[in-house]
Length: 94
Image (cartoon, rainbow, N blue to C red):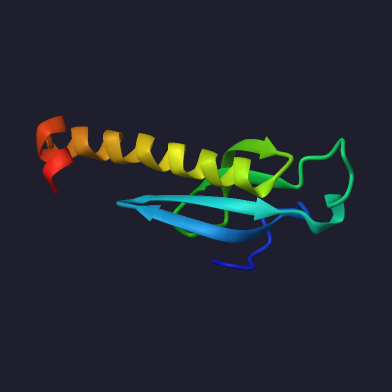
């Protein structure tokens, strides 16, 4: 849910991507903005209730986090395509 705090961290969900049963999010920690050594953006996978976040990837800028969210999303698409028996040629024409 947008604006939701991520666990006990200062990260807040600023973007969500839902693919089949998967939920991927970008979190932003405003307290880290302006610090060249920090990673104010992160991507996580979340459970269906969005009360548990895991497999975090951390980034210095929003664009890098967005790229990672898209990559993780495409990884999920390929995973669910295999689960649903969708072949590469079918996926490309849908």
